[in-house]
Length: 111
Image 1 (tube, rainbow, N blue to C red):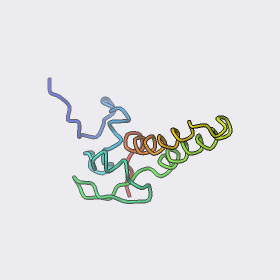
Image 2: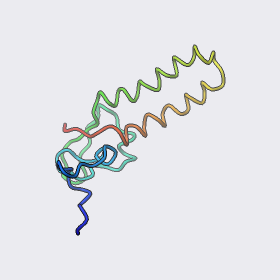
Image 3: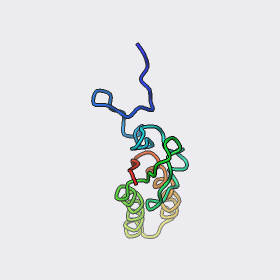
Image 4: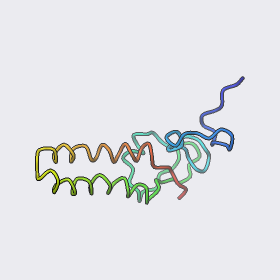
C-alpha cells in the first residue's frame, strides 16, 4: 500500500483536516508558503505561491473575525474584570491568538 502524497489537493474520498488544508495553494494544491510567513500575512496582501507563482491571499472575512474577536473580548472584559492586571495578560495574548489562528485556520484563496 502506498502512502498518499500530502501535497495533492484533497479528494472526495480522502479529505484532509482543515488545519492541513490551511496552507495549500488553491491553484496547484501544494504548500504555498511557510507557516510563519502566512501567520504575519495581511488580509489585503497578495503573495506568490512558491510552487506555481500565482497570487494567493488569506480569506478576508475569516481573517477579520480572527483579528476582531479577541480585541472585542478584551474590551468586554474591561467591564467585567474592572481594570485588573488580567487585562494586560489578555492584551499580550491577543496577537499570539490572532497570528496563530491566521496561520492554521484561515484558508488561502485565489487572487
